[in-house]
Length: 425
DNA sequence: TGCGGAGAGGCTCGTGGTTG
DNA sequence: CAACCACGAGCCTCTCCGCA
Image 1 (cartoon, chains in turn cyan, orange, purple):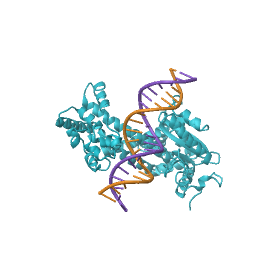
Image 2 (tube, helix red, strand yellow; image 1 turned 90 degrees about the horizontal axis):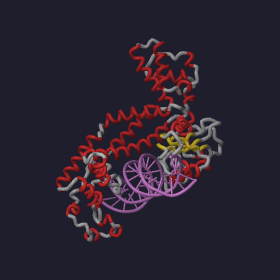
Image 3 (cartoon, protein in one colour; image 1 turned 120 degrees about the vertical axis):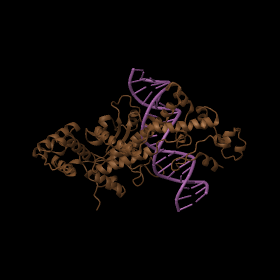
Image 4 (cartoon, chains in turn purple, red, yellow; image 1 turned 180 degrees about the horizontal axis):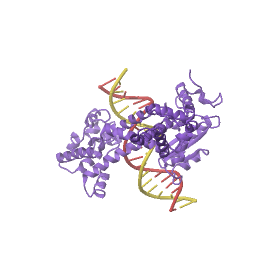
């Protein structure tokens, strides 16, 4: 039932991968655009049909190789479609937007074997992250890792140095900064996932098991690779990509580690290895190039359009991705209604109320939360010492009662501080 | 002056041990 | 046995600074 992976000798290790992965690789070899749509006419027919447009593709275009149509820049493609619609006497009022819709759909279909499913997955992923953006004072005062607390000194600095002493905007900036950090993470993962969905590609499975750096055909087939391109023909070998968002994402030490991993992949599977940074327009100033190349001398280092071109086999990759993301962001924004301005106002109010209650300034209470606590949780010498609590030198009444800590009840991803303290030995 | 190594800081996810 | 938590690996950003 399952299809074999093509263009590889019978003894190649890829044939020994677990069944589901082999299937995905085989599917990626068969969903290349020119295999699914042998001519430009074929993809036009498909898109016209999807959009219920009763137009025939002109003969001269219909016979052309599909690549000549689908790899046109968006403007040219929609102009071409506009001409077709006009000649087919489609009502003038609708041709303009319709031609853009067609061009968009053609480019989506060019990129993804299953555009609708991919768009849905992208939106779901974005929504997940938007739902976890900071909403309460507790969210910004302590991250999901208890070790990450809001820095009152930075808050003080931004209040005075950036916002003329106004505390409110400095809280907004803190919320926005935290949100942006999360968005950065989202975009990085999104790129890997979305590029992995494109024709000819698969997203390498995340490492599993004990040693996540060691290659294991069963558990961990591609450590160090984010995206795998099985051979597209007998002339194009297996290609393994490590994808970074920007050239500066990784530093020298990371470069060495990633280079070592890529080299091990090449030693195991053969083929070509790539180190791609999507955002960036020059190799100059690349912080991890040297590290990667030292460890993997044959690695191809790519940035910007050059990287997109190898990953998407098209020059339209960057714009396409931008349009796909934009529509997803708009849709998710509509659903979530998240607003930094509103959230900041709520948080500011919480800070104000607490400070009033304790009769101190905003920053003083932030400072106490960021540094206050019991010896038993702050001093490694007292860590397992239940006496440490009573023996603590921290005698402050407020500290003892924890009255000044924010608690949060949106249970799923944040912990109630008070509850947590109580459960401590 | 540019490169790139190092370090600080933030977030996520999977794993494996502990606890209720 | 499920829920919870700590930890490590990995991804991202930015600044600093020695060296060629």
